[in-house]
Image 1 (spheres, rainbow, N blue to C red):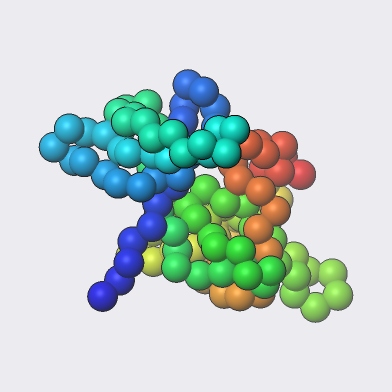
Image 2 (cartoon, rainbow, N blue to C red; image 1 turned 45 degrees about the vertical axis):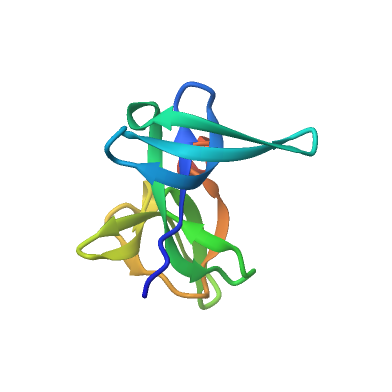
Length: 126
């Protein structure tokens, strides 16, 4: 059985949230944040967030990859690829950005997460 895991980008507070439950009937998610060593849960509506699924893979530093992560990998001495983790064609892929636009790579453990498109948009411009 596959254990699905999500995180969410809060569009209004501009911060990443850890998702602890999804209620599709109420159209929202339950989050839990650590504030001053206290666990504080909130209900946030789906239209206020962008829901991001885990790929189930870890990068070369053992960090879990999610949709929206910006990743890079190297090929040989001079080749490299920078892309955004995206679910397309029934699988998670790295879709190239800027000078790598048009390149699509399957994810593997050789990729390294360098940020995400929400908190680090400058990475998409390099």
